[in-house]
Length: 165
Image (cartoon, rainbow, N blue to C red; front, top):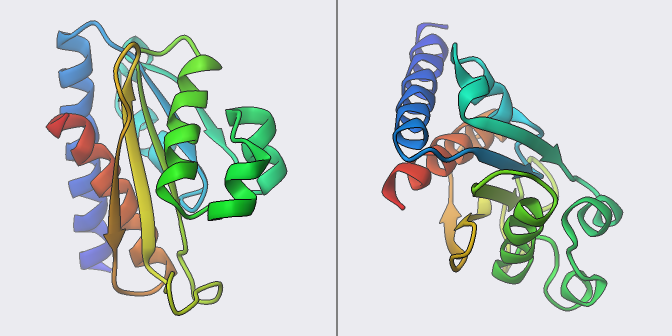
C-alpha cells in the first residue's frame, strides 16, 4: 500500500505543478478522458484552488459519446478506431470547442486486461494536448502493468505533457 500512496502523492504533486503553470499563464484546463474514466479531472480537482484553472472534464467512453461530446467524426472511428492519433486529435480539439478552457488534454487507450490486439496491445495509449488557437500534438505511449497501473501512468503522462508543452 505504501507504493500506491506514494504514487498518489506523485500525481498530486504533478497536478499542483500543472495548476501553478496554468495560473501563471492565465489559462484554464479541460480534460477529455476515455481510458482514465475521469481520473485526470479527479486528480486536478483534488488540488485546493483548482477552480482558478480547471474548467471541466468530459468522460467519453463509447463511440457515441466521443461523437456527441467531443465531435469525433464517425468516419474517424470507423477508419482508425478510438485508440488512434486521429481520434485523440479530434477529442482534444472537440474538448476546446465545447468548453471555455484555453488548454485541453485528451486520452484514449486500452487499459486492459482485455481489449488488446496484435497491433494495439493492452497498455497502448494516445495522449493529445492543445492550446486554443494552436495545433494539437499527440503522443503514443506503451505502458506496462495491470489496468490500474496503465491508467495511473496515463494520468501522470497527461499531466506531465501539459508542463512540457
